[in-house]
Image 1 (cartoon, helix red, strand yellow):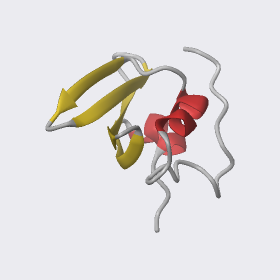
Image 2 (image 1 turned 60 degrees about the horizontal axis):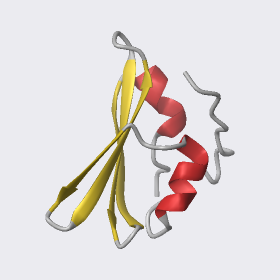
Image 3 (image 1 turned 135 degrees about the horizontal axis):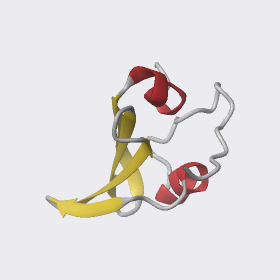
Image 4 (image 1 turned 45 degrees about the vertical axis):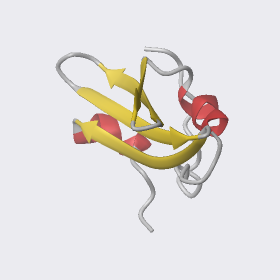
Amino acid sequence: MPNLSLPDVKARNDFKGKPLSVVTAQLGNPDGQQTVNRQKIYTWRIGNSVRECVIRVATADDIVESYETLGDSPICGPYEARAN
């Protein structure tokens, strides 16, 4: 697993409306990418096959429209979107 620099809790994953470059600065390059209905969906996988967190970011024109984490709570916790 690469060394990831986690943002401080107050700024953590407040990515909606920001450029994709802000996300990649925190998470590194995505593990996958696909285009669905003119949106680009980027995927990161953190952890291992037993305990994994999948992070998905949907963008339009390289601006984040949505951000979600799926998977094991202890692994996803540091990456979860901030509560509004």
